[in-house]
Image (cartoon, rainbow, N blue to C red; front, side, top):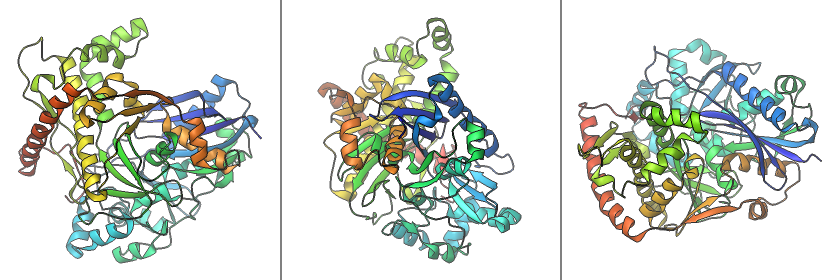
Length: 520
């Protein structure tokens, strides 16, 4: 049996290969940023370049092997994870023929078509699948049928990006429930495809690859996969899952009534449940967990990580230059200055993502408001901190949303992924939520979740819940500051009012939505 486990993680903003030892210690990571560009012919599109992106992914594998000098024969198993919702269509020979990334919104006309033809169908599908048209595959496949009939005619299979990575490694196409359920074509209760959903929309009902529960072996690395990555043929490749679900495993969220926030390009609040129950008002998403007999309520905040990247690249040239000179992280330099800004940013608010409303999902125009013209108080560090506070405000709203469905509010929260590397952001989150925030030692929680499933697939780990008790370590706990919480409670009430006003401006087409679901 090998000594190491490998995880491949295809996120919204980057792809990475991560190697762990069998105790769950992260040994090395290789990462490449990538983009999903809009096709100018189709507003709202978010294309996935499978040729270039596989070059990046395979390059990460080669780089991490080279960095560690690990013999590939010592890798016991590999598993994969990715952004959810992105889909790939294949022909009969498993060649990619069309793909889009997660928040592709080109299918506006198709959603309108679906709603006009059957106004109640979306709610009916949600009750079975936990998904609406907002991010699901149904309108996108219908778009391909309407706009690219030749591609639709040649479509024989549909899959997700984590399964695409397995296909590239092994030549075998499969799907698993955690990410498969985000298509809106899964039955939550059975954790399998529901072909009748496609039938009701007039789409092909025979394009579904076999379902493997997460943590089971799908295939082994092929000769081709080995040649392209530097791996050894025959390494077992195990079904992984969606990034949030595997992130939950990686931080120990493996039992009912636990909650976590993942602060990446999107912020995901995940709350475990043992019942596949949906919301009567269709406001919150429900997915399969990557563990059998578990499901998750999920409420998403759009773009906090991408907004921070935008702010860094647009306004932090000085810090970027200082980073080059000192070797310190740009965000650490910004955090030091933002810590000097008091909670509440002198009354300044910003609007980016809204609290989730899955059945009618849209966000106001990005806005900073109520800032003064005093450069001592309102400078780029104030704006930077305001972005952090906004993300925490949305999270508070999303937790309240899930609580309105479950009747439960977490007494503590686990905070992981990129944003959790910032002590300031962790403290702000704790202050806004008024509960302790636990930050795991391993920041690549999603990759660790994939590694744990890889180990389970080959028998290194027999029980995931017991395994996470051993390998998941808490690095630090942040406790709420009472005075800051008082400030944020007042601020939150104002933020909800400001956001509602900004959203109404977008509704009147005076401003442009940061994002809106197709057909909304």
